[in-house]
Length: 463
Image (cartoon, rainbow, N blue to C red; front, side):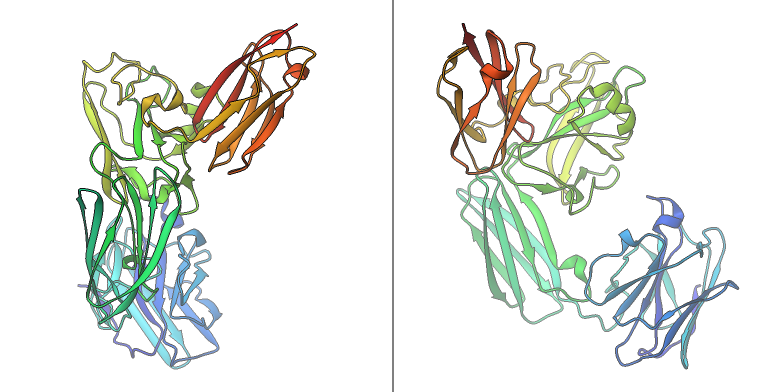
């Protein structure tokens, strides 16, 4: 049994202690969370672990205080104040004693030996604690009382002939304002609207292809159930694809997989990962952009030595150990499967990697070779004034039409880039390409690049 002293609601109260994380080094991920009340004020707040020197800080102006060694775990949430644990390292192999006080208020707790990956969470404001998954920066509505929480309790999706029907329920509030935005991933652009809901809702999205959907309720004390970010796609029609798997490369090259964004919409890596293997692959600010490929490996530093191209994007993540003889992978977005691949001894002979879409051996890290026929519509269109030029004649002019920024490059006969120009999105402009200045008589190439999409067109320079 875990014990804590009873406290008044208005006083600063210990509500969560996380001493032994497993995904990151202990000190980096551990934290202590204290609940505050606006009806109580003081000059200073003190926090003491065992017999160590107490932490002293100005009394926080907020609803919660999260103390940690790494501010990156502190979310940007209304009413949350982030603080520093300083030199205090939380014990993960023995019990710990905590005291929090300010003015006449005092709260204390004795916590047993922790369990790896679990945090101590207080049950109500009493003397019992339980071990649960950590919730840094917000309360757990299963145990904390008096939380302002209006959140999604159920969201379901159904495709009907030419549209998606989205329905769901909210709990904790009689009515609320629902904001929804959806993006057609094949054409780009988004539509946003709001609706007043009461208990349940239903939305019709007139799209017959993949859709990136976001549902959002107003921010409250429990932010994790206020937002739904998902990808609606029928099986075999996902824009996020596993396009290359190297499950048994030649030693010492590490195992790696390639994921491709076959759309005109960016997807945050914080939502992408292998189903049931490790976590997601980045933060909300770190995305896989339209027509981009990323290589994912446990050891990106070593993989860089084998890739050979500095501009190929690598992402370090836990992908487990891929079975050489037979195995499978499922790619998830927001916890839902969006693509899958399987292999056995008949798929490809080790140590070669393979393309799941063709089933053939492949080793083209970061490149899709004109999409490998994955999509029918290319993300750009181009025109040439001519593809046969005279050495002392008119310069080559190229026009690019795209909704995304495009890089125009000039390559010499050996395939080396000798000139480049960035064409802004929707520029619809003719660009002069200095072919005569940078190349000799013979063959040269113009390359159009957008994310990982690439199209190379040959030209000829005559005397």
